[in-house]
Figure (cartoon, rainbow, N blue to C red):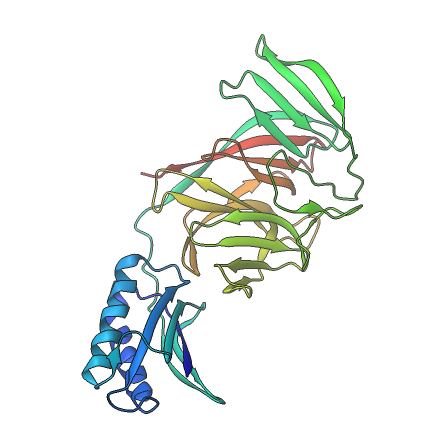
Length: 329
């Protein structure tokens, strides 16, 4: 006999009592499935953001409760498989046992407000009339490559100005109303004739590593967080279409830059940094106002920087800048 149990939780320290009570409730229900003195093979797989210590606590608690009820743990054809995962709003213990499932749940504890704030610094790099898809800078900041819709242009810094070196035509020009492209290695192909990447299942604009999962911005206007799961553990509907991971010396050391969702042409544009803990997230900077809509936001070669391109409403110029984060005093 095989019994599959999915435990959905995150188990922060402040939620230890709720976790303990839920495991006890689940164990009591499991006792009704297995006869006394039966032997089962227990395995626990962690698919959540929790760390090894919490996983060990779950394993120890479950083993103790099972043995205390008279169930032996060891080699057996009867499998008790526990998977640890999580969802955005609550913790669950789910035990499918035949046609019905045993479900025990509890609410997640409110996230503790961040005790620090982070400031976004915007450093201008270059501006021009033609659209800029991405910018690559050398480590010493003396060489630059601009990715345009139909070519890559190289420049060298001389006399405090960028001097043209050469231009290389693109193998496949970007033809789109709102063109996109990046020097970064995106694990998906650009949809032909469109301005988004095709994952094979859905279209995305950008992708970012949150530290515990992967964040996608979809063509349907929603951002989705996946954590080793097929289905998203979190869906956000009030963000813009651009996100980029960035490192800093503050907080968790890893944040995500996010553009604002703007429906009107004259709506204010801004970028803001957020920090993720599992499927929970919170802002760690104030919004940084920008002079126009963001046309590109990419993680730079240096992980503590991101490239942002803004189409200035007043001048009509495409302004490329580097974004970085610093701990606010």
